[in-house]
Image (tube, each protein chain N blue to C red):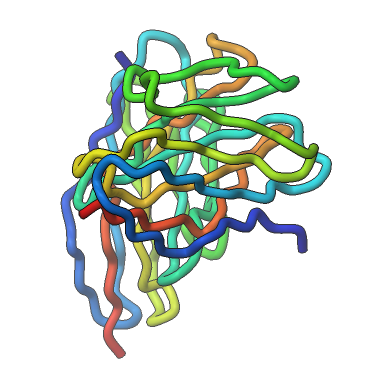
Length: 110
Length: 115
């Protein structure tokens, strides 16, 4: 059964550093998403991506964040200058109708 | 904006006990409703869904009914198993937005079932 994969499973970085979280969506899916979950809080929508452009983004998704689908298979989330409050679990999802989620990347900013 | 409120956990039950996890929502449009489950070390998996009032979603013995009058979508299972131990998330998507239909999640409820 096809699945969404994410790498790395855990990333530790220092405040101010750039991080790139990687996702490989299911191959025939057209819609792509990033969500995050700060420990003990809700899963929050960050951004959706369709037809090689952002279709919707939340107020969390400020200028520090960017997404890219560089090669038609990977889907990446970049955080340019990480802050302590960016520490969270980041989930990628892909869909044609139903959203399929990856296992998440735990980002720890120290 | 749209929001989902679900029962705080953790919930601990014995095997074969009855499970209810409450979920209520607020939405400006007419949302679709979902329950997702996250087993340890895995991603979120769709458990069941309902797209209109009075629809009942069901899967693996779990059920939830879309109640528009009470804006609720409570998850139930008649007899839980140890393998049901997981975190359960209630979610909605606002179909009136069209296109990407992002999901709005509740906080999640951790269920532990003891033998």
